[in-house]
Image (cartoon, rainbow, N blue to C red):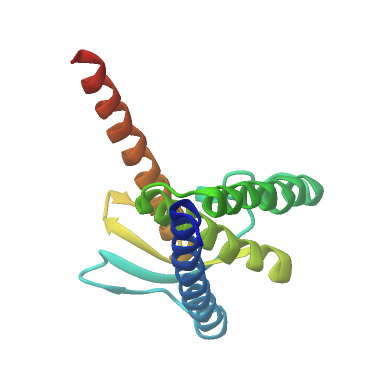
Length: 173
């Protein structure tokens, strides 16, 4: 008979596999489109420039941080380092029998990380294609994988905040 813990772990793993498969496929499809149809073309905008579709090659990380590193430095940090971080996240998902929201958060981080890792391995850079904002306040250029990673990190912070709030309330009683 399968224990309740094993059943929860299996459920979490199925959820993680589904989220990862779906997000990685969508991310790669859109990146292939951006690479084929946006590269070398002028940006175009929607909603009076609030949303801009523009091809960009990011050799760094978030907001091109680390783009100026040597090829070896970028390989070490953005491929090898990220690979080990993703392995840790996957291990945490597999071992988790806790609240499913943490599995969703880790799955978003893993899916986005794998999506960008695929780009780095096969292209040598990450394909970005959208930025948003107003004339004096704009985001950097990003992609679906970046949105998944950011959302996963925000969810993890929220989970930790709520967990800390629950622990401090319990300590007061």
